[in-house]
Length: 131
Image (tube, rainbow, N blue to C red; front, top):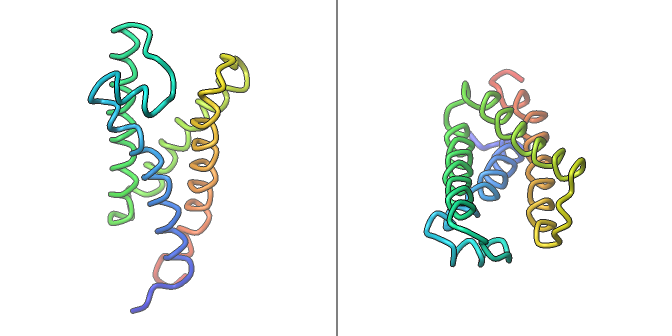
């Protein structure tokens, strides 16, 4: 059976959001990668540790979104989890902007992820058999 527009849209939305969350994964390799990814110097070993952990967590979120493509029961919970993470980051950025222009790119990607995840939530019910 050929996929319909809703299935294609869902796939693009989830894969797009997953890729955004997989982008930081190379940061787990150390400060050189973190500088390449974020365009900011890593000031100390503790900050490097936290950013490397962030890379792992984001990788897990990206993999969860990809798994949700195959396992329908995981879609809504995983999408809501990643959406909550993205919205929390954006809220912190609005409330307590750290003044770093280097983070503007991260904010833009998180904004795009939020849009893609909302799109996934909207079209997912349309992909169910009989919809």
